[in-house]
Image 1 (cartoon, one colour):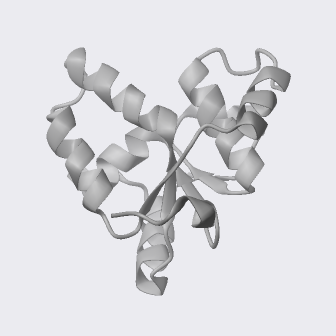
Image 2 (cartoon, rainbow, N blue to C red):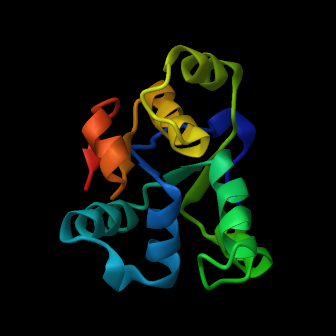
Image 3 (cartoon, rainbow, N blue to C red):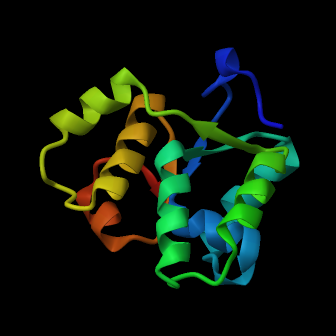
Length: 141
């Protein structure tokens, strides 16, 4: 079950946004060719892939609203048991980056995910046009 807190963020290269995580675990055919290639390469190297802790909240909200067809509790179990998924906590550094980011991204979850990628110097795997257009973080589209 995941790695110990002292190893959080080490050897990571990719952070998944919420919808990419859902696609990767539930409907991988919906990923782009570049996204599939990046994730496949990480898996082949045994390299952990990160998600922001805010992604767990977003999954719960999407599930409650019926916007995704998955059971949040079952999906959370799958996340925790996945050998290559690492959940990055919201830290003071990420909160400070969030506060400094201004209003370039209006969605607080998107902003938190971008700030997590920035603080940990990770490429963000996303299809979100607003995030891509913001150029706040390197992306895998």
